[in-house]
Image (cartoon, rainbow, N blue to C red; front, side):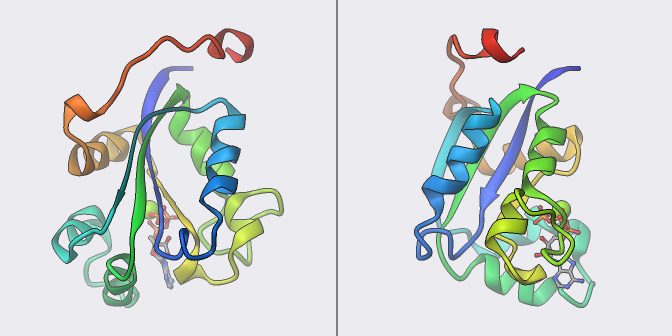
Length: 150
Ligand SMILES: Nc1ncnc2c1ncn2[C@@H]1O[C@H](COP(=O)(O)OP(=O)(O)OP(=O)(O)O)[C@@H](O)[C@H]1O
Ligand SMILES: [Mg+2]
């Protein structure tokens, strides 16, 4: 398995629901290493770039409207096979199918309010990280914890 960086974004509503800590705790406990973290409002242009693959689909316009409706928390996470690990912790896109114990399974009811974005491949992760962060905003540091889990 490869040590890699991936991208996560806690979606609008995360602050209002007071579940930021709970969601980040799950990512940390899995062993993912936070290397960048930003609270921000995203513009329609950035949301469109981020979700460019979905342009033209029926859910696209409401998705962009929702993603720009309130602050999000963008993160770079690193770990062994981090993209795959993060997708598993998030659970299925549709909360009806997301297993209990996953973030979406535990915190959401609707497909269009599924709490967290996770990159779907290492290539998507690299593209998305570059959209949201400058290289100097990504912090490398010694991680004692890693020796106990990797
Ligand atoms: N059929 C749909 N109806 C309503 N919303 C949808 C539908 N399909 C996808 N979405 C919304 O668009 C987002 C992006 O869809 P995608 O297929 O990339 O799923 P995902 O990769 O699991 O989610 P994300 O990219 O946000 O991590 C979903 O998280 C969901 O909020
Ligand atoms: Mg996706």
